[in-house]
Length: 404
Image (tube, rainbow, N blue to C red):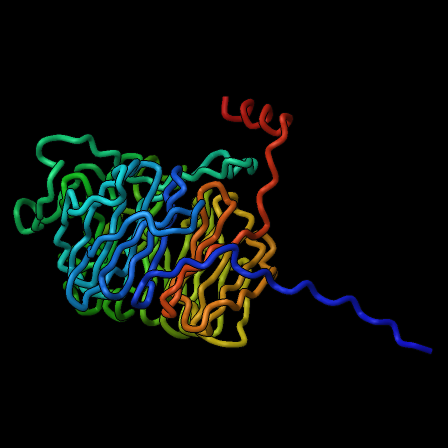
């Protein structure tokens, strides 16, 4: 009697497109929130804008010189036609997207004087639409400032934080549209910056507290990852998750800058990446160990809750991201693979094996239709995975009723 043949598993998809043109490792990538553009930053300092429709380079600039390289790039709905690049040269730069592509010079250069491997984070505000029901638009609220063009900021200028106050309390409560979080000059600190004025708002823990030898952050090593957000429960105050060399993650509220409101250690080695979901109620983290962790944030109690711990065959996760509709999460691995998960259930959906070297970052487009992965192999891959279902008229009506 012939044995029954088991149905074959569906093979993982190939990239919808591969973007080639960088001559060095691609460290980070991000989509424009409304235009068909993808931005990528490479280790040789080149910042590229790609047309996601034609899959061609729209423009490129040498953003960070020398051997510093572009370590992080960020765009958000609040930024409008601007993007931010972060280099290993101790600066963050703001670029304008013009008709011909990226501006040849940054309109603002902020000297943060931080030299590290921690990528910056724009402040994320919760998307009410996604926390209630997912629609086809998948827009999130990555908060960054629409800066009006004035005589002062239409040309490139450099701002050094030593000019003027180092830390000030103004602007801590807002929609977060003028802020970014980065690892600080003091390796265990986290800093919150106002991008519009290029001023440091606050350090966490505050400088006076951090100077104490027995302060808890001193024992955790370098800050390796940050994620800034404004949960509904915080009354407009910025919260920050910061992950450290010893594998721990701290939860900060700027109203209590001396000590974190909660601490957890999910990783046995350095925690390298953390991402918060669209509702700001949970997230995903990866590190140098063999784990990916999905967690929730209990805002009333100010505590982390472990939701799912995923064991990996090969260690090393350099990047994590969650799709704006909170349905899909993805990780970028040292083993050249992109892993895709059901964010709600935590089960694996696909392992994508295109890249030939370490994957450094992965990101989703705001409409949830594209995912981009970048690698040390100098390429950026575009993927079309699990497209969101179009919003029905009934869902649209219910969503409008809820928002009213």
